[in-house]
Image (cartoon, rainbow, N blue to C red; front, top):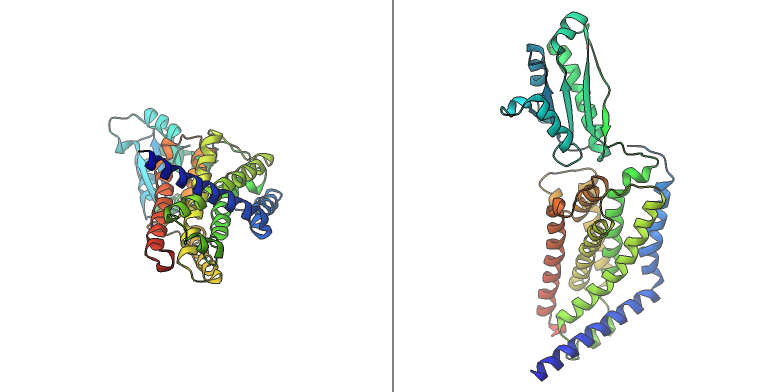
Length: 375
């Protein structure tokens, strides 16, 4: 028992030495410090002082019909045409009154359950047929600005279709979309924070850690000592995780300076940001372990990052997005900071980020075990 305790103590001492050595080396590396701290400051401040400028997934639309008329049903049918909008009405919930369905819509709008909802007031048909005009009450989720823009655009297109299909050219359908919650977009950073934070934290930590094993001569010397592969990975992962916490606090501090709203718990927001950094750390160490040169490792990072950026920003394939760390960070941060949800309510994002990190940690461990020069 005493020998086992001494063995554990020696392993702990070696891990502490690796952590101390890694942090000391990192602090002496001016390029790495520039990537970790200067780049976040430069990018976030630049966006923060920029102007607000502004495409996305199918819109989940609810329609509350108080009129229950021929024209209101025609309106619903028009909205249901095509794949761009998924429509749910109070008629899909036969045991729920229109008023109760409206209350549910108000409750779900700030969550991920709903993109927008429309209220068809009593007298909708009479207004169109008699008065030649009517007013729609439209509420749109304001948290995802790109999705909100897309939802409003699709609703406008569907309104035109409704007029054409029902030959009500003389009618004017007025609608004044209300954004909920009412977020003050005082600068571009308020809109871009979730995406930029995910890209910066993941990108910088991956880039820095791609150099932590490949070409590390001192590490190869350590391999001649009674050192376990797991100790190396644990030590390096903890080292960069400690540094990432300072980067996260710095980045969140800049967001607060530019009045980016945090409706959720600050510790929850830090946690999801940390998980984003952890995915970058474990992936970067994996790239570094399987590479033969520093250049090769950097090229792997560049390829992965560019492909992921394209999928997140432009080619939003539903079957790929759930597997991308940055996409999950964007959704997780938005849920916590902007929607005010709890960690449990965004547990799917949390579990994915944890699973991604664990998977690449294990992949790296298996590779180093099989790599002859590390035996």
